[in-house]
Every structure is written in C-alpha cells, then in structure tokens.
Image 1: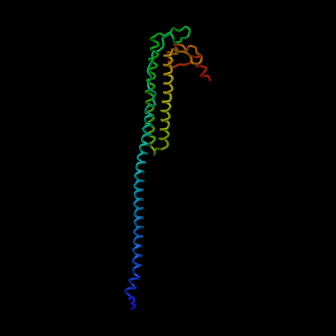
Image 2 (image 1 turned 180 degrees about the horizontal axis):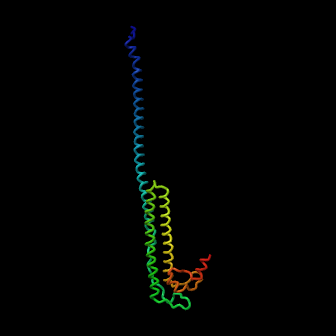
Image 3 (image 1 turned 180 degrees about the vertical axis):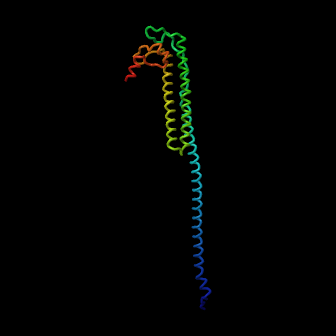
Length: 222
C-alpha cells in the first residue's frame, strides 16, 4: 500500500528547518546583544574611573600650587637677616690707633659696640619695612590689570625705589656686622687695604669705616 503525503505534511516538513534556523538566529542575536551590553558597561565604568582620576589630579594640582605659594611667601617673610649674638669685644689696648692718639678705653670700646648694634637693629627694621611695602606693591600690580599707563609707571617707579632702599639697607647691615666682627677679633681700626691704623677719631665718626683716609681717597679717584 502506497502512502501519499498530504499538503499539510509537506508544509510541516518544510517549516521545521525554518523554525530551527529561527532558533539559531535568536541565539546569535542574543549573544551579540549580550556582548554589546557588556562593552557598553565596560565603557561606562572606564569613563567614570577617568572622571574620578581627573578630579583627584585637579585636587593634587591645587594643593601643589598652594604649597608653592606658601613657600614663596615664607621665603619673602624670612629674607631679613636674623639678629646676631653679640660677642665680647677685644681688649681696648689691642685696637689700633694712629700716632699721637690715645688708646681706646673700655668705655669707648663699649660705646662703639653699642652704636654698631643699634645701627644693625635699625637696618633690620628698615629692611623689613621695605619688604612689606614691596609685597603690597606686588599685590596691587596683580589686582590692577585695568590701570592706565601713568598709574602703572608710577607703581613701577615706587617699586624700584623700595627695592633700592632694601638693597642699600642690606649692604649697610653687612658692613655693620663686619665692623662688629672686627671689634671682637681685635682688628677694628685696621685699614683693610694697607694695614695701617685708620685712626681712632675716624672710627668714632664712621664706625663702619674699613679704609684709612689715604686709601679711601685713592679709591674715590679711580
């Protein structure tokens, strides 16, 4: 007996492979969608981590800038030379005098030492005042971006004047401290050029003098 296939059976036989292909396609599509979602999640995580790192880096940069500013300010505040500990001066008889002059007395030596110490203290205060004025001028220059040329020129001249005052005060302080060192070492009153006595009268008039009258005149003629 021969069994003939009906149209219903044929259509069912044809549809089965189609259903299998659809299932495979669904599996592939599901896998692709899963991979895409995974990559999107990884990308979002990386972006979040990048933003967090950027914020941390910015914070570190701010801290570094702040530290630099504080260091500069500290350097400016401590630029005035510190006061030195006064040592006992040499014996009066060890200090040089010119022929015909009387030897230094203990009171005269102490008077010279006190005058030098007072001058050093005055110069330190002058340096401190000049540096405070310079700091104010620097702040004004930073805040006055819209000033005209006349105002800017005036501020520049004032700043240069204060800088010159501070520099001159530092030089005089250096000479004063050298004189105090010579007073302790017993070489106070010796000419640093020729080695001859400067003279008691000249030292009392100019306590920071390092040259005798003759050597000073030759220096000024050069």
